[in-house]
Length: 575
Image (cartoon, rainbow, N blue to C red; front, side):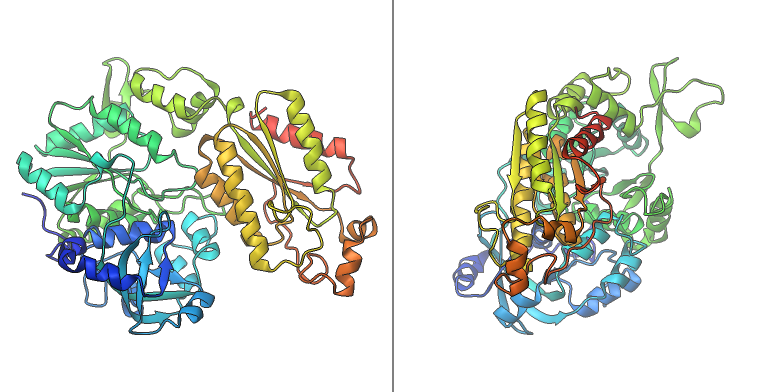
C-alpha cells in the first residue's frame, strides 16, 4: 500500500478542477498574464499534480515567513522549502495586481494557460534572511543564493491556483508520472514497500548496488526518481542522464525497480532540501527514502569549505521522522573490493582489504581525455552514453566573453582571436560583436539598462547553442553590469551542455584612453548629450569581480593579449 500523502490528502488540482477546466481556459483569455520562469513552471506542475501537497498554490506572506523561519506552514504542517511566485515591480504596476486579482499563469514554452491564481497578497521578501535561513548563508557561491540575488524579482505574489491543464512534455513521456499515476502503478503491481532514490547525476555500479542492497534489506522495491527540472548549473543534461538511467535499469533483478522522472527545480539546500525531497517522495507513494552523504549539497562556499556537513541532511530528516512518516535509508558509501569483485559499504570493509574508487572529478577527467573507465566502476552501456554526450575536452565548445568599455580594444581582440582559432582549425568559430546583435552599426544609439541586458541575453542564448554544438564562440558586448554578466554565464552553463565552458575576459583599458583614441567621436557626442545612457559617460561600468583574465591594450599588444587567452584555453585542455 502506498504511503499516505503529506497532510493526509493528495492535492491533485488537475483532477479536482477537471470539470471546470474549459471555463477556466475561457476566463484566462481575458485575464492579465504572468509568463512563468523555468523554475516557476516546475513548481507549478508539482503544485497542480499534488507533488507539493498540502500546497494548493504559491505561498502567501504568512506561510512564506513561517517556512523560512520554522520549516512549517502557518498552520503548523512541516514544509521546509518556500515555494514562491516572484514578479517585477514594473509588471506588478502594469497589471495593477492586488489582493483578489485573478492572474493567468502561462507556460513560457508555448504561452498556453496552465492555471489561474487568485491573489491573496503581494509582499516584499527579505531575500537576505531567506538566503541565510534556507541556504545557510547569503553567499553567492551557492547557486540558489546567486539565483535569488540575480534572477528573482522584487515582489512575491501569494495565492491558491485552479488548474486548467498540466504542462505538456514531449520527451520521455512514458516515464513521466503524476503522484496519482505512480500510486496506481504501485497498487497494480502490489508494491507495498517502495524505496525511493533521488539523483541528479548519472548512475553507476555503486548506485545500483546501493539501491539493490537497500531494497533487499527491507524486502521492498526500488523507485529510481531522478530530477529532470532545474538542477545545479553544469550538471549533466537530463537527456543524457535519462538514457543512462534506462540503460542501468536493465541491470536490476527482474521486477525490482521502476524508473519515473521528477520535474523538480532543485534548490541545492542540503538539509532542508532532504526534508523537502522526503515530503515529495511521500506524496508520490514511497514508503522509504534514501538520504545520501551531503544530500543536495552545492559544493564549496566562498571560503572553500562545504556549505553543509556530510551528515547534516540525515540528521534533519531524522529529527522530523515522526511527522514525515517516511522511513529514511541512510546512504552508505559503497566501495569496490577487487579481491571478491563486489561492492560493500565502506564501513563494513575489514581493515587492510584493498578497495578501489573513482571520484566524480576523476570520472570527468577520464571522459574528457578519453581515458578508459573500468568495468568494475560502470557499465559499458552507461559509459557509451556518456561518451556520446561528452566528447573529449579538445572537441568541446567554449565561449570567450570579452567585456569592457566602448573602444577599449575588445572588438579588435575578438577579431584577432577569431583569426587565431580559424588558423588552428578543429572547430567552427563564431564571432558575436556589439551591444545589439541585430544591428551592430548603431553605435550611437541610446540604450537603457534593460535593453543592454536583453541584448546580452540574446548573445548568451546564441552562444550557448553554438557552444553546445562544439563551436568556439567569441562574444564582445560591453555588458557593463555584474548582474548581466552573471546571468550570461548562468545561461551558458545551464544550456551549453558539454560546451558550457565559459571564460570572462575583462578588457580593462582606461576610460581616458578609450575616449582619447575614439576616432568616430562617439564619446564626444555622449558628452554633449546626443546619446543617452552611454557607458563611461552617464552610465556606470561595474568592474568584473571574477574575471578569468584581465588585459589592457595600453600596456599589452593585441598579439600578446591573444596569446594570453590562448594559453588560458590550453591550460583548460580546450586547445
